[in-house]
Each structure stands twice: as structure tokens, then as C-alpha cells.
Length: 171
Image (tube, rainbow, N blue to C red):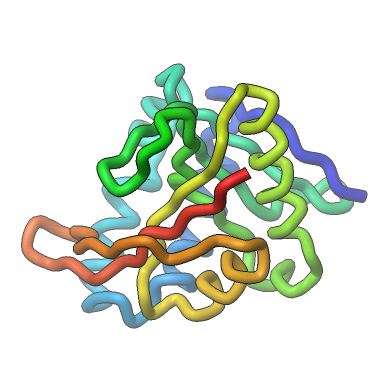
């Protein structure tokens, strides 16, 4: 049984726990291990996640499978970007699923939930950045219909960056 719900501050620990594991797995090799661990430590802790959950611009969803939280997403409505002409587009800032639940269409369920949420809020598309070395994620997004439209350097630390694709799906 799959459920997807909007996260609140009380769900911070679920996001921290899943984030630490899944970000590490998805971005292994994207930078030196100590830089990646620093990034995860700075972005997936109680204070950082509670702050994000309390910012009205951030919309987190958690997916559960048979009662167990297995992933989450974070979107921002009306997230204008210079490479995209339309103003009514969503930024998919994060979407992560624990590795053992990948390959079972659960990521598609969570992504589709976000797409439907975006459409209900009069959005015309959804965009994201993904590390060019995360071939599994790139393949996932392309299957849904995302197109690569640009690239940029994502800073893992102040001195370490890696190339990311910017991808867009129009509705």
C-alpha cells in the first residue's frame, strides 16, 4: 500500500534520515567523500530541515510503502528560471527514494503526485537540476518526458562543484 502526504515540521526526522542515506547513494562519486559528507551534514540535519519545512515556499511530500516512509520530494511553485520562458513552473528541488525501493515504480508515483499537485496549482511545467553522473536519475526523468535544456555548476562546498543538467517537463 502506497500513501503520499504533505510533510510538516513533525516529519523532519524522516526527511533527515532518508536524505542522509539516499543523497549519499545517489551522489557517490560526484565529489570527494568528505565534501559530500559535509554537504549532507549541512543540509540534512534537524535545524536545516525544520527551517525548510517552516518556509511556506517549500512543499515537501513523503511517500510510504506498507506503512514505512521510503522517500520524499521538495517542490517550489512559481519557480522562475532564466532558461525557462514560462513563469508558472515548479522547481523539483529534491526527490529521493531509498535504494531498496527503487525499480518498483514508487519514484514514478511520487513524481506523478508532484506533477498533479503542480497542475492543480496552475503550473505549466516542472524543472530540476540533476548531477550529470547520476545516470539512473537522468534515465528516470527522460522516461517521464523531461528534456535537458541547460547545465550549471552545483556547489557541494564553497570550493567543490560538479556539473548538473537542468531538465524541464512541460505539461
